[in-house]
Length: 397
Ligand SMILES: [Zn+2]
Ligand SMILES: [Zn+2]
Image (cartoon, rainbow, N blue to C red; front, side, top):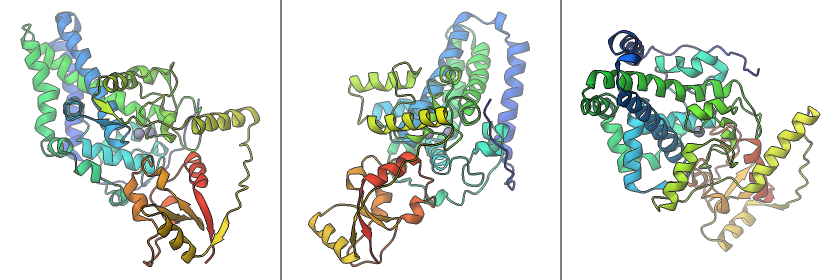
C-alpha cells in the first residue's frame, strides 16, 4: 500500500451552494433508489439509460474536459467540441473553463498543499471531494494560460450557460428519455440522480485513489499512480502515472492499457473529426520506464551525469544568434541559453508562455529560471531532460 502524508492547510470559506447541492443529490439519489424507484421496480431500459448517461458524462470529462481542453492533446472539429461540451456538462463538475483552469494548476503544482486545488498531500478525503466544499482563492491562477479556452466559442457558451446546460443534460434529458417508455420517475432517479453520483465519484477517484495507491512505471516525482480498476471505471483515466506526459492523447501508451477514451479519440481521428494527436516521444517514454525500473531494482536512482559542454556566450552573441534565426524562441534557464523553437508546439504549458519569457534583442532580459524551477510549474525530470537537449550555450554575464 502506498500513500501520502497529510499536510494541514488553512481553510478557505465554505462553498454552501455546492455543498448543499452535492449532499442533497446523494440523499435524494439513495432515497429514490431504495424507496421510490428501487432496482426491481424499474424497467431494464431505465437501467441501460442510467449506464449510458453515466458513461457519456465520464467520457465528456475524460476526452473533452481533460485531454482536449485541459491538455490540448488533440484538436477537434466544432461538432465534436459541442458534443463533448454537452456530455461534460452532464458531469456536473463545473464548466470546461472552470475545470480546466483548476486542472492545469493541479498539473503545474501537483501535490503542493497550497497551489494544487486537490492536492493528495491534504488527505484522501480532501483530494476526493473535500476540496469542492470550499471556495479558495488560488493565488497562482493568474499565471495559468487561458487564451485557448477564452478563444473557443464552445467553451465561452458553455461557461456562460453552464448551470441551465448541466440541469438540462444531467436531469431533464434523462427524464424525458425515460418518458418514452413510460418511466420518467425511474429515469430521473437512475439516469439523473444516481448517474450524477456515479460520475462524480468515478472522476473524483482520479484525484484521490489514483494519487494514493497503484503503480508508478513512469515517475515517482509525484503521487500519481495507475490502477486497472480505476481505468475500468473512468473511461481509461486510471493509468494516472502518465501524469508526467500530460499533453499525450492517451492515458496509457501501451496497447494493453484499458483506455476507451483513447480508442474513441483514435476512431474520431480516422473519421477526420479530430486531428493533431500529440504523443510523448518514444525515447522519453523508454527513458522514463528504464529510470523507474533501475530505481525499483536497485533502490536508488541511476546517476545521470550532465556532460554537456556548451560554448560561453554573452548577451550580444545571443542577440546575433537570434538575428541569424528570425522567429526563433530562446529562453534563459539556469544560466544557459535554451533554443525552445522546436519545442513550441509540444510544450504542455503552451507556446505563448515560452514566447513571453524569451530573449528579445535590446530589451530588458526576462529570465525563465524562476518560471521553470517551480514559479509557474514544477517541471518533471523528463521535462528537465528535454530542456537540457535544447541548450545552445552557457550564459557568460
Ligand atoms: Zn492527477
Ligand atoms: Zn491531467
